[in-house]
Image 1 (spheres, rainbow, N blue to C red):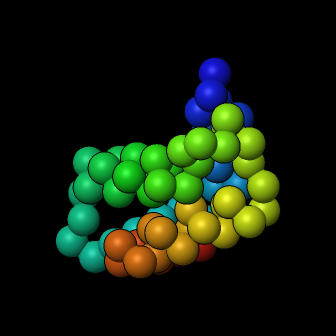
Image 2: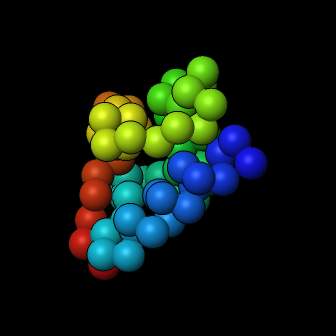
Image 3: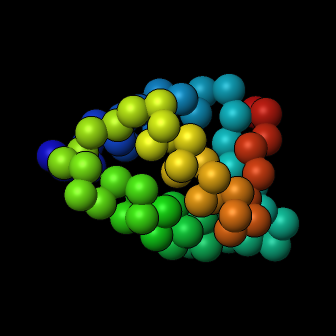
Length: 70
């Protein structure tokens, strides 16, 4: 339940774009996303704010991922 709300918000926000990284697989994304979620949401009791979403996106971008329009 703790990660349900962030997951739903991420899914809801992905309707018009997705993450890509040249040469990376879906498994690579899953690992990086999991790492960034742990870094961003750990200790927040599942609370998602605009600031935490920006931190999550910044973490993925720091790992080489880019937002790409669908």
